Amino acid sequence: MNSQLIPVSELASAAGCPVRVFFNRSNPWVEPSSYTICKQISYHLGSRIERDEIWQEICRVAPGIDPSYKSYYDTCIDHCCNKEWRAASEYDLFVTSDRFGICGTVDRIYTEAPYFSVTRSVKPPVQGIYPGDRIRVLGYALCLSELLGMELRGASIDYIPGGISRYYEIQPRDMRKFYSIRKVLANIYAGSVPKKPLHAPCGTCYYQGRCDPGPTRLSDLF
Image (cartoon, rainbow, N blue to C red; front, side):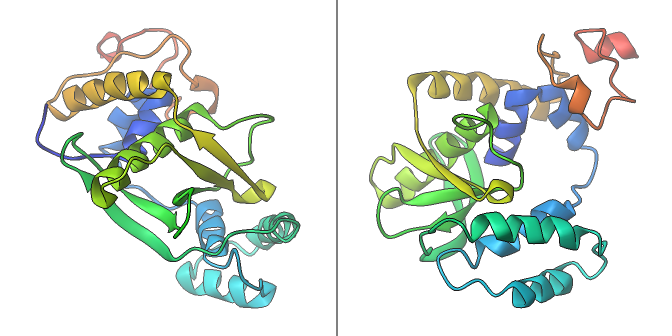
């Protein structure tokens, strides 16, 4: 496998479509305003939420944010205020796993199980968590298990726009998916072009104009 560490975020993205990761690697990541908002709110979960103060922090973090996002922010706050949250002991902890060749930044760390949670800026599914979030939980758990010297079997996903936190316990299928995705990403790093999965989320992909939903290989496009 390539010696370069693979970000857990790329593993999660590749769970939906590795072709998207292929394109992302040639385009600098720009933080969406929705993520900026949810991320800043997450720092205040478990303590008194001051609406105006948090919004001011967001405007300082992203001075060019469109004022229309204030409505989105208010909705997130309304939903989050209806739930009791755990206070984190640490934020944004960068972790790695030499054994599995991955790395990433864990959003929120706790002193008691479940020991971490992942912040998401999307509404939660009707039930459970999204497939990409299963890989996020697994990837960060592998890294933290290596750091702490203890096996972590699950974590919480904090869906800020819905004010919902859901615990997920890692399943055997997640590890199988992890090995499969890691191999695909290692090949991308080595210069190969990935295949498009049969159920790729083309309808919601921002590369629709560059990636024709018809062919199953990018090489068919050139």
